Length: 440
Image (cartoon, rainbow, N blue to C red; front, side, top):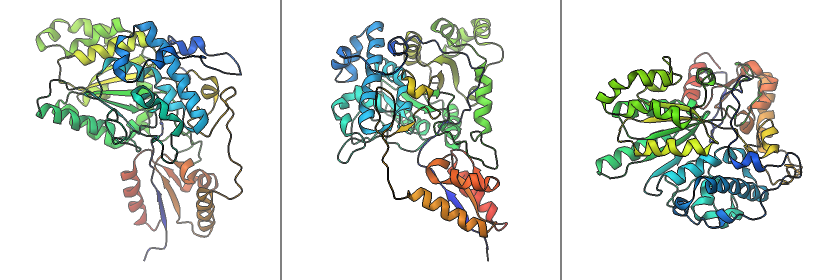
């Protein structure tokens, strides 16, 4: 009979997993966000939003030139800020993909083309551009719109989500189905973060996509910031879980940003075989003999990047080139972004204001309720600590959600008995089963 108890705490949300690296190259702040953001409080956006006012669906964006697209991105950022300041929600993840959202909806033709947002907590700009601007006041409210993508809510929400690491599998399934139906257009784009891509399901999907040569684009949004920084003492220390994220980050951090010119030179691998041979030397010169994307290329993907995810001047033509390619080889486009970009309080906060309550837009100060009753999370964590003081076989396992499950509290008391395995629930459960054989 087993004496111990094992607690497996599963997650329902992705978190980032790239530790900040001090020698990262600085971003080129080419969007209007950096130009128009005030240097100190009180912070405020544009008094009017003439470009955004004219956007009722992504089709309305097609008539805009680059200058107007940049203005739209700035107006969209402040619209997101103003909305979330009144309702609370996932703020910084949406700010980080603001320019990417504008670029994707400008280049692709939704809902015929499919854009799948992994987790989809970063989808607020997407919702505003797809006819739900007036409904943002009901975000995450009873009877209002969801904080995640929801197929029944809009035809522009290609895939429902709320958990991480599902986007690549979904995009591949859609691509295969479109091919079987002989669809003339087959553009399926999965947007996945640097935390979610550490989940094993992402690599199962990429392995399959490379093998089946599924036409799809995976956009890896690398913001180098743990979405919910743990700082939690555990058996692995306090750094974000996953050696894989460290490997990928270290491989790519030293490479310069690709602009459109260097991308055009490296586009060779999507060309017919005979042209590839002719241009091989050019390709090797542009990409470097040792590619930062080796891991992804070994899985059968054509790797592009890193690209500044806030630079519309380069992001738009690169996406257009990938869209218009006749190749069926899957592509991984690696973009670098700053979480909370364009709003100084978010950029300065340790958690980049990942999930916020209502807040003062001018200062960034959050209005949090002063509840007297303890939270269910704290009750669980303290009860677990009490039991663990009497029974040394009790351990805690979390899948990248220590703060949301109480494992951060448990970890501070029992760091050697706390295990954060990253976004890997299947592994967490089986690891727990293995430990149970030895009475844990």
